[in-house]
Image 1: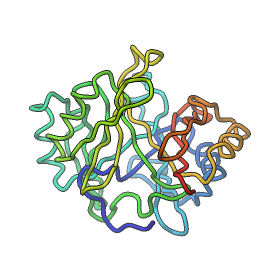
Image 2 (image 1 turned 90 degrees about the vertical axis):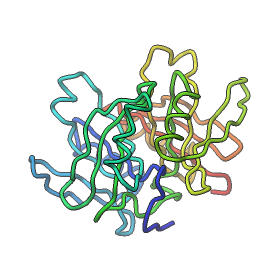
Image 3 (image 1 turned 30 degrees about the vertical axis):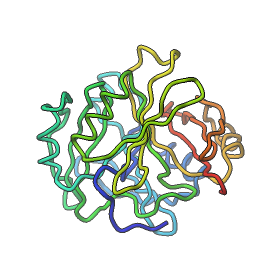
Image 4 (image 1 turned 180 degrees about the vertical axis):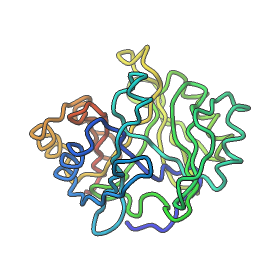
Length: 260
């Protein structure tokens, strides 16, 4: 589905920060059918915008030296759309979060900041100018869902409700826990859940999910390209999903919606 804007509170852009952009461009291009559109960055290197039929769907770029020095592994960044990034960022600390990078212009394409919610989940805020974020969503190879795994779902959900004006809905899960759905403009846009026991001690983290036609076929193809399975294919009422790690160990999700 083509879109021309993103409602505040909607995850609007996924961006891979990696140590090997060339390898990642090849991997994801073969997996999702993306076309690479490299764009020179002022500080050097290319920002690889990924296209489907000419529409921007994601990006791949070099990991910043500071991240590498801190020992941060390659990862997918999730950007959430906001109407006014300065005003929104100014409310973060009052809500118990942290501002990791103050609001700044990204040339003429938009304005952004990087924040962490009170449980430590890092996410980017994006105020669109020339670049709205993803121009196509909800179909194979595009932004299908974003999800925050956290030690305290209730606290995280309250933070984003106050910060972004999103609504939340809690749904019971088979294991007795709850899955919180974030809503923006009346639409389900993201999920928040409590980290399972095997993730305890890990920092809260966002995962970007891409739509696929068939989860199991995509897993097989990804493994053939050098990926690893983090969470095997699982059925949920809305469809089927899995979490993979690419050749540089950046985790990402795949999601097959019911009826796909």
